Amino acid sequence: MMLAFLPVVIDMTILHIAIPSLTVALGASGTEVLWIIDIYPLLMAGLLVPMGTLADRVGHRRVLLTGLTIFGCASLLAAFAPSPALLIGARVLLALGGSMIMPCVLGLIRKTFEDERERAMALGLWGTVGAAGAALGPLVGGALLEHFWWGSVFLINVPVMLVVAPAVFLLLPRHEATSAGHWAFGQALLLIAGVIAVVYGIKSGVAGTHAWAVTLLVLGGGFLSLAVFVRQQLRSPTPMLDLALFSHPAILAGIIMAVVAIGALAGVELTLAQELQYVLAKSPLQAGIFMVPIMAAAALGGPLAGHLSNLFGLRAVASLSLVVSAVALAFLAFADLHNPGLGVPAMLALLGLALSIGLTASSIAIMGSVEAEKGGAAGSLEATAYELGSGLGITFFGVFMSSVFSRTVVLPPGLSPAQAERAARSIGDSHVVAQALGADQAAALIDAARAAFSTTHSVLLATSAALIGGLSVVVFVMLGRYRTGGEPQATPE
Image 1 (cartoon, rainbow, N blue to C red):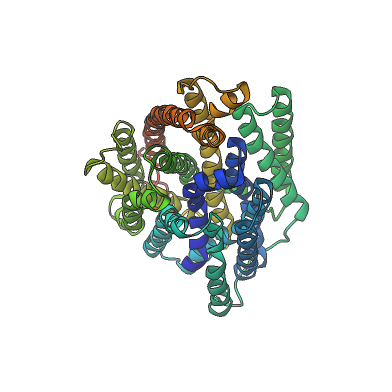
Image 2 (image 1 turned 90 degrees about the vertical axis):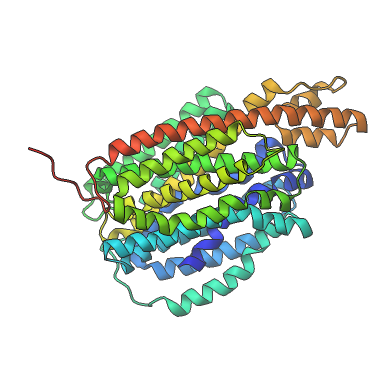
């Protein structure tokens, strides 16, 4: 399960380190870059719940093998995509394969470990792979880009899948308990369309890419689709998604925690990767090495979260991990990355450790609140929270960065109106514009972009710290009457 899960989580962040190289090689605009990154979590958000419930119906092994095959083929297509549009299309197929893999992994863990303490430790190991894999992405990407072209960050998935798929075929049991009922294809399409429309409507509204009338129309259609889906689930004797799952405060707390924490982490990772390469002029490998403390500490957080939750309870572990994450982000917001000393690596390690513990705690809250036969559905809800957080986090932070950057950057004279408009959008666009300028003018534009991006980076980290600090209070309140495993505590008379 860990081998099947690792390439999917690495693929969530490995692209971050390749963005500067990819942007220049394909001539991608800032909007195209956001879609290349964002189309993966956007579609995953819509596909995960249907795929999780499908796995509960027909068996996790069958769905997992199909997902691994699709993911490997899509990685090959993405590696050799000649244009931004084709790369976005390949990322669509990656999302389809990934949406089959993620809920199956969590569902099989839930089926395997019935004991609550063992399940907490198993989910801790799963959290280690998830957090460390996501943190490992920039380092792996940096090492590949040091010697190969940007497509190598996708091509690396192919040999991994060639090993993992046969292992899954041979090692997983061919017979497994499945839940009753049939998988309604029409209901699945309704849910997928509703989720994608709502998320896309939010994205376009925040980014201002469409007129408000169009945005409201998309949002309205999405909410209508979801309302019809909910009505069908409430009336069905064997619903695709058991809506009673949302009645558990522990599940709701875990979902909220996963959305906000992973959203902040995705935005911070993407911004830090650009800061290190664009502003500090580090190579992709050097940027990846700079982020090693996050990766190393995150590898310890998963098992530690399971152990601490068994000792002190889920509420204390989840809330305190978010408080520590907020403190680390606040420190990094005002730190001088040009002279990091020991403070910056220490805070990066603390951030990786705390967020890894917090995200694993959210897994324990969600997966410990359901029966084994509903493990795929619960796992898909958690995975959906991760993808929504990643997609919306990158969108909100991308728009936020663009807004602050365009107001902060002081462009050099002599640029045409079209060049000035594009250069003010993002630091990546500034580098693309600089390629068409003379040496002196290009250097002046790059210097202006670097200064503006450093300011933008600081504001973004400070905002992330405030967001996660507020989340710690919400989680503390929501888990007030729940122990680890989601069992309610007795209410005093």
